[in-house]
Image (tube, rainbow, N blue to C red):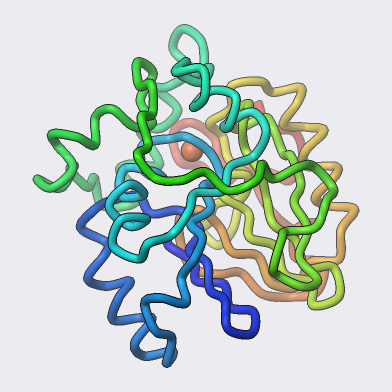
Length: 240
Ligand SMILES: [Fe+2]
């Protein structure tokens, strides 16, 4: 998913998973009546390949800077890959991959894209970096929006929250393959439980997941399910 945020004359994209997304993003901007030059920032919710492989092309195309959370920023500046789920943890991505129709990597991403968002990737973005997005601080230039560090799915995950409007741009902290669920893919289950509690304490009536359609409804995060490894829709509660 690529989200477009607009505030006055400024626009930002949140996550660009593939270079192949760009024509569709441009059509979306056109439909919204937003000129390319208005897109001055691209925000990455976390450094997983399916959220960042198109970012370098997007920032170049729109002349935008890249805004990262504190953990992502430290990884990019030090050229260190982020931590990934240990041992067989990444296998938990398989059911979700199947539920999305088992997509393969677009040709456009196969060369340079591999340097971004994989367990070995040093994420060599060529664009300017915007000021770091800090936990519980305002999102610069976007009135009403704040940044939340939400580790658990990945150590560097962030969400964007508009408290008054009740909108959460959730990255992979929330997904929607089967009606809206917590993410079974975590690199730290304990941190993810804390993140779930934090998100459930917020006013959220619109949640924009990293995968799948937007979720709506007052208090929707209290009703999210957890899906077991084999795709069975499990009861609400802990992510195992
Ligand atoms: Fe992810």
